[in-house]
Length: 431
Image (cartoon, rainbow, N blue to C red; front, side, top):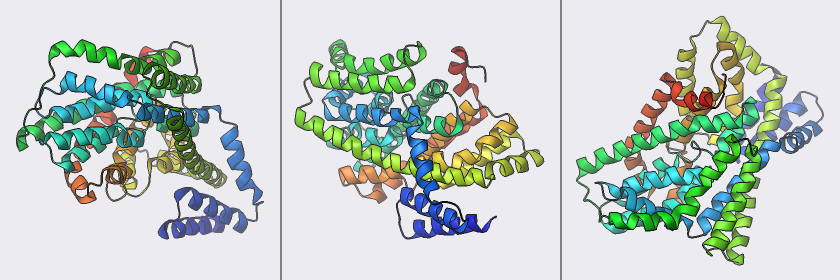
């Protein structure tokens, strides 16, 4: 290890220890590296600017954020929930099932777990608590667990970031996330049904089946959005970034003109909040880009890949070990940092071992989403605590069964790659 890299890591850990935001910690430690190594400090700004402005794919991130915020601002969430209640609310643990199905549907619009939890999540928690059948801790826990589906089913902001650092097709990554997202939804619903039966949750009042067509029509414009996105990308009509722009425009038309649920004042709030969220993500991306320059300059991925090949590691053993490592990291780091800073270290090793990068990417994103509900850092736990006031201790106690269910789903994705790769191969992926 060079002196410059050692100084960089010391600066990084020191900043993290005093609570410096991740983006600033990455940028400051990179400047320390350049200074100790005798390199031009302007390289930091050059790497950030080039990385942010030379990558067309990054434009999809703020556009998906805008689309999600518009969906949350209008009455779209309420219409989707009414549809889900009519669909699955009649079963034992019905509002828990509604929570999961709503996340499955909303994931096709937002691409963000935090957007799902803060928007539609707060509404469904209130519904579950007011019904009197569920404790507030359980309502918050299942909301946090189901929100992890958001970035797995396309569109997915984390998959866009993974595509940036791995040079993998966004279209095939999006396709690869569809079946895993559905599998995770089913696993969570099975866990919810088991808990509902064990704890004796009462059955919620069923919506008459005759109401289902009307509620479906009310929600239909919103339900159409994922179909438009997928057809645009896989029908060869748009690139993923162009599809993100269409998603934002469609959300605006549906919320503002069709449902008439978006005023000029609320639109201003949506744009301002989207700008803040995009800037926060952009700072982390910028810090990761300059840090990735350091990693490349030190040839860390090459050395790591060479060491792994020299050890003759079995690809499955490597995947299991690296996912265990990511699960541990998820306790302390946010998903964006893991995807932009840590995962690029292992991409060359995956290539050397013959591990499919679409499979690896989807599995890594699922792993990072599990980290969002893993104490002590789990950002979704803090988001739900902030928007509902439910104590963290109650949420954490109730979320653990869902955590283990998600880990089992992750293990299935690792052991059976066809769950991820079947759809991409159906659309011509040759990996």
